[in-house]
Length: 217
Image 1: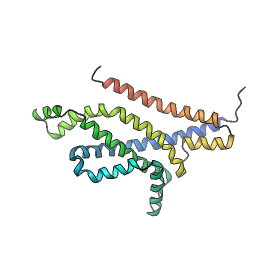
Image 2: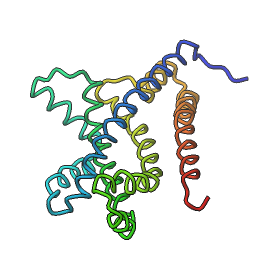
Image 3: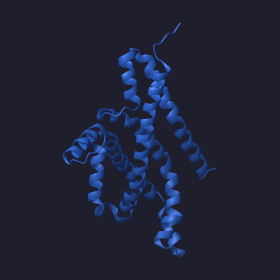
Image 4: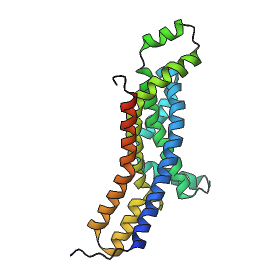
């Protein structure tokens, strides 16, 4: 018969870690998406030449491993004496990391809107703002949704790296329990199940919206 030293308090400890994971992910995805939309529109509108400085900065965030970014971000805020808590540093770095990828999702989705459709809209007398709001934004949103859902799930899993800054999120909480209870397989199975329960509704919601918005339905 299976026996474990894990108690209800230990499970609650894991759930609190999951709450930290959700909090960091929600803030990073929300802020990163807002910045990504802004930067994506700028890159789309001004082209690769005029947006080259912005592109270079975003390439840095996409190219450097997230763990290095977290460590450097924490060191930089200490050098500048900003006094940020680990939670704040984690959210800022993850937001910029998310924005770097979201920018390309937005830019690529906007460029995927047929040029002929936009020309037809402008020939009907639409202004640039009306064209972007009524034509480009709805079509680009449908195109971008699957990639954005994938990015959200990826950021949630990557948020486990914030444990290096001292935050007790889900993975760090499981490591603490493994060290104390010496039941790695059982605890990691529970940890994986919690990750699945968090991720599955997001993935299903994305699939539902993608199917609903499909032009072939």
